[in-house]
Image (cartoon, rainbow, N blue to C red; front, side):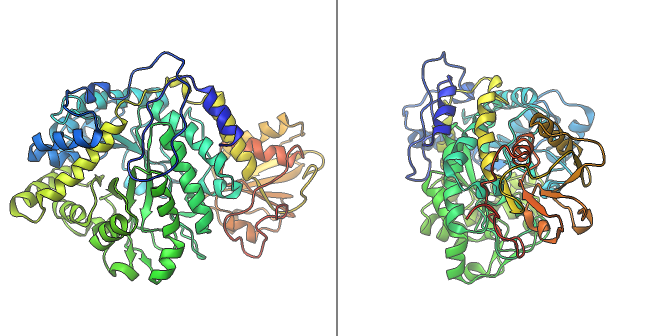
Length: 577
């Protein structure tokens, strides 16, 4: 492990009973020091039921044998809920829950449907996944920790006596659910630009510690999709880049970092969303590659993530023509069982992408649930009709369209994961936003800054500078102004050399041709159209990214990053071979 990670690990004094590999032979997770008093274990009340076996898999099998059909059906569901508290919700949240599940609160939803999990959601207009998040139930770390504690209390009263899987899409970059008070990692492209898996692992370990402190035990990340030549607008900076081998190293490092913190990692979107031009939220995108190209371009990051021990793999609503033409992967046994289980030997939990996305709404919720389970998925994410999905599973059991062996196999995998990670010691809330975490992430940000055109040493602007930004990027602009001032540069409201910021969703009209420096804070493709003499990619608009950018502009740091995707005719870096 690199020095950065060793320092980060040494800084944490809370002991962890670390998540062991659910499905691979990756290297052992790093152990944190065991000198400090133990904090309460996550979901202790939900995992304290007596069992004749201490082995998670054996305990799971014992539990499955005594569960009713209703219990089994509930364990495979992982919906969202309205309300920022498990029990105390306002009228609007109660109305949303009644429409979705016929109950008022998230806790009542868990009790009624005997749920195996719940996803925390957040809607932002500049989020490419926002359409599937009709509400927000995350506000800040303290609120999230109180919410997850309440959810676990509800799960502890269920017959399964197992902790709830509480997940969220904390990818960072444009898809980040909890933003207030957390240490913000940059987008995956920044990790690809840095090209240092040791820094990736350290940053994701820090992120995992913060998620665990908030009571989140599953992260629907990292994105294992490899970008094709045309890119993918819905994936973009969420991917580590266009090189399958480099992506494989990054994905494995992210998995190791997350799971060393006690948070289960999820590889998505299998069998790969990077070589599509469509958006699976709205349509069924086509993966056009032949089988050989798919295996060489899309599979390596998934294989490396599985080998690193990823606990979950998320299916994509994608049409892989070379394997099962016309069938969304979520509903394809050839893809989710023959390829994922057979070829890649994945033995963990397979979770569907959101079932409220358009390709999954081809059938009623109950039929879609049975089809997804029969294909090989173990958990169904965000069903649009929870009652319909549950009842469809029960009907499938009665009619034989869903074999009991398939359902019990799925629930056994789910419970094995839960029991394996149930006694992870929850970090204190003070872990969130800590200086130690900031140092780990800042090192990654500094390594990612990429100059695609311009000087490679000394200050990149002489004299005073003026910072401008497109659209609603005032927070990033202010953070850069302050960082430049802290680096000793003079910043004035007008009349200085212009440093212009652009980001996700911007187009050529948002560029400023008179700017001395143009900075792209997301996927860097737009820089190919800029006329500025200096072009820089940060791949992120976070405060730490702006501080790293300021150090380069002020001449106090080099720009070692290299774009992990092609940017027109520009070099991947003007400063790094």
